[in-house]
Each structure stands twice: as structure tokens, then as C-alpha cells.
Amino acid sequence: MNIDLREHWSLGGVEIPGRLVLAPMAGVSVQAFRRQGRRHGAALVCSEMVSVAGIQHRNERTLGYLRVGADEHPLAIQIFGSDPAAMADAARMVEAAGADVVDMNFGCPVRKVTKTGAGASLLDDPALACRLVEAVASATSLPVSVKMRRGVANGSRTCLAVGPQLVSAGAASLTLHPRSAKQMYTGSADHALTEELVSLVDVPVIASGDIVSRARAQSVLATTGAAAVMVGRAAQGNPWVLREIMGDDREPTREEVVAELLLFMRETVRELGDQRAAGFLKKFYGWYLGRGRFPRPFKQELVVMRTLDEVETALLAAAPGARFILERLVSELPDPADEILLDELPISLYGGG
Image (spheres, rainbow, N blue to C red):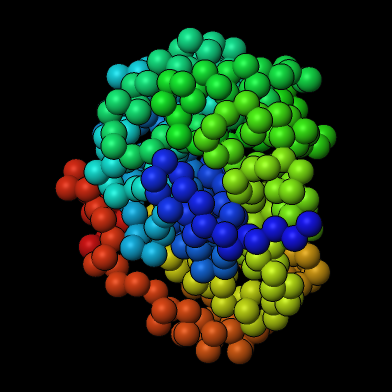
């Protein structure tokens, strides 16, 4: 069965122009990553999860996640926490920032999140989970989506009991990653659970987990009845997987790889500032330049370079033709003046004036 991945669908009244969604990933989904995903075929992009405690305390770094570019729409900003009032306040900030969807994280399996009563631990407290959804849905006119795991324990089917309750509480969409929190990212995603969840709720369900190719995306959509598929780790340093899923399986040239990495570097510096960006970007070198695209020693050399200027010089020396592709990509960027910056956000968040 051939599924049309360009088919539009509605998430609580927001038109999503395709069935491919780019996942929210902590330490990855900065604005540069989201913009790149949109260019390569993602119909909906999501921010990394934003702490409501950080928003409540007006933490500069946390508020920086609420930066929204004109070319990111439709955009979901994901929030996490366990206090209904704080979640409601965060939802209002997300709406003011210009997002199209408020996404709630009920799936993060990381201990520092779950020990606060947030993330995947909320699946074991459905009453609180529903109060959080009700608080957020009441605080904003934006549609509310919830991303969740199958449950905390291996083999859990908690998502099938909790999912319909979250919809009754006000969720306009659910995203299911059918691994347990204890599994983290081991094993495989059981999309038979996704199919069951689709049959239990009357809102769109997004299927997340192990979507690594067009064939897999088509298969999951066909067997589950999900409205869309969500791509996560497969797109880290590899936006071309989005293009392949959408039907263009041409492999990128070395010059295209370097040009995309350089643009990503420059945009990340603009967003995070030189100092934060330098450390943040190191993991991306291996992601972009791996898959046999460049020799391992070259990637290792980049990681130990002292400045990003040195990294850029080395990359352009390895693929001189990337310069011309980069110039074209830069020329196609929207005017930075079109970005929405909340009045409360200090300009120092973005690395200078």
C-alpha cells in the first residue's frame, strides 16, 4: 500500500502539510535543526523539551528555547513539568512566542526528569497527567498534544488506558513511542500498540520510534492508521533521511554534507553564542560526517580544534565546492527580523547584539 506522505491533516485545527514530523530531542532540536528539517521535508517540527520550572523562574537559557523563526511553522514547542499552574503559565508563554502547538512531554525516561514527577513517570499517575492536560488546554487557545511512551515498565500497556483519558482532558493529538521508559532506546518499538491506540481515540495519533526509512514510514502508517510518523535519532546530522522518506533517495554529495553542516554551525552560533555553540556542536561532526562520508581521523581532528573558525576552514579545505552551496543556502534564509522574540528575552541569549 502506497501512502501519500504529502497528504495534509489537521492537529486541533492547525493544518499540517504532510505526514512526516521531526521529533523533539533534548540537546539536539535547536532552531537550526528545526529549520533544516523543514527544508528537507518535515511538515511539523518540534522544539526540544522546555522546563516549566525554568520558564517560571525566567531562566535565560530556558527562555531562549522559545525563539521562533518565520520558516518554522507549523511548530510545536514541548514543555515538561509536574505542576499544573506552572504548566499553564508555560503554555501561555509558548503561545505568546508564536508556536502553533503546545506539546507536553509524558515520555522522557531520563532519571533527572522522572524523579521530579515529570516525563514518563506521569504515566503511573494518570490523575495528575489529566490535571496537567486540563490546565494547559484551559490556559491557551493553541491545540495541545501529548508525547508518551508505552509505560514505565517493560511490556507495559499503560498508554492504552491513559491515552483516552488524556484526550478527554483536552489533548488534541497523541504521539506514541511504543518503548517502555526502562527500555530507553534498546530493543524495538512495538507499533502494534500504536495501532491499538489509534482504534481507541478520536484524535490524530503520531507514530514515533524506529522510523528510519521511507519503507518503514509507509509500513507503519499503513498498519497502524496513524496520522503521521515522527523521525528522531535517524535525522541527527542526517537531514537527507527526511528527503528519502518523502521520496527523494539521492545520496548527498560531500559538498552538500559540508555545506549543510557549516550552515548548521553558523545558525547555532547565532542562536547560542560562540562559547555554548562550540561545545554543543562537537557531537554533530560525527553525525554529519559519518556513514562513510568522511574518514574517521578527520572527524576526530575537528572535535579537538580550539575554535569554530578552525573547524570551518578544515571543512572547506576538505570540500571546496561546499562554499557555493553554502552561499545559496544562506541567501534562502528568512530575514532574522521576522523572528518572534518575547519582550522578556534578553538579547544576550543569542550571543550578542
